[in-house]
Length: 154
Image (tube, rainbow, N blue to C red):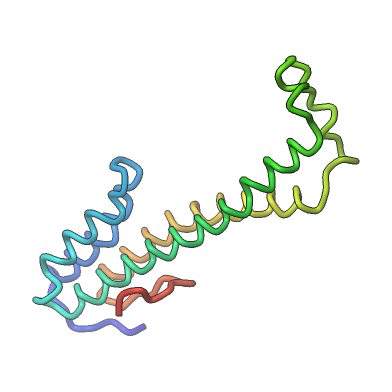
């Protein structure tokens, strides 16, 4: 999108809102709490800050939803495929061998689960870089839209 005429203070504050989503690596749920606090304190004073705050929160909520869907798909299917090939008696007796999980026993459901795990890892790496990219674009005064974002807040 195009750059808008905003003050440096608004650009810096909006950039801080984007970067505050990275606090999830240090504070549990920091990617929701800090952006909400920062956005809520200045959303009425600037349209640019309001737009970016909503955008960051929509992106974080979308990533949460996508992560939950991928985890709901991958974890049960991996557990099902493992316990389908190994009985509980073998696990209790300590006879759990990975040899039974050979290429012949790997089914399509395992492939689906592994693809879901791979997508989850890719999504988390892309999320990190998109937050940085969004902060850079916002600091330049542009209205940045994250890709594949569901608009929960309008």
